[in-house]
Length: 198
Image 1 (cartoon, rainbow, N blue to C red):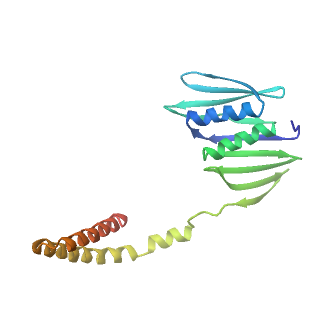
Image 2 (cartoon, rainbow, N blue to C red; image 1 turned 30 degrees about the vertical axis):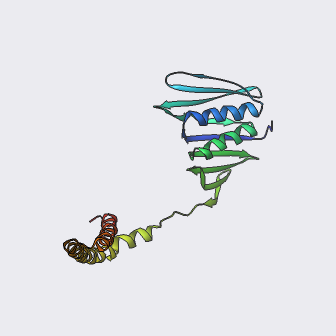
Image 3 (tube, helix red, strand yellow; image 1 turned 90 degrees about the vertical axis):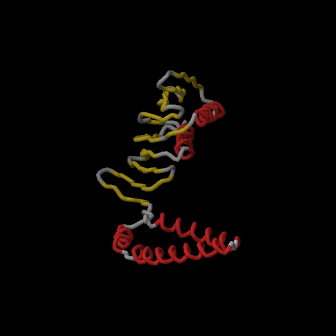
């Protein structure tokens, strides 16, 4: 065990099924940990012996799924690797604080992916990494100001009217192929109307 290794897991939001808990138990046993588990109507509890410490992982039952609850301070590198694998596999959210040589590295994780990495040294902190948002504020403003949807909506209504008249003509003349093509076109117009919320 690396004595300088210390990781704190806070604000955990991990949800998973019973199989993932069983996989964690299997991985812990394969890594040579001494452990036992118990279950009540409310909790599934895994107690892991890590050196002289006993780490109790608590999983709250939520219908037929589970959610890990509590904050955990882990001083065992292999055990923290397994906990991070659990965060990643369940695509969970967490704040992970790594304590190293009078520094703290804080990772903000969402959906199993690091979105922000901050290094804290005394009173100073610096952002090492920050994931860019998928949509910027400027793009949202442009979308609200755009008239493209309104312009497309008026054209779409004309296309719909025209296609309905084509279908009517194909039905009255008994042209099966034209009817099928017209129905397909009407279906794609319908989908576009739903997307434009008409």
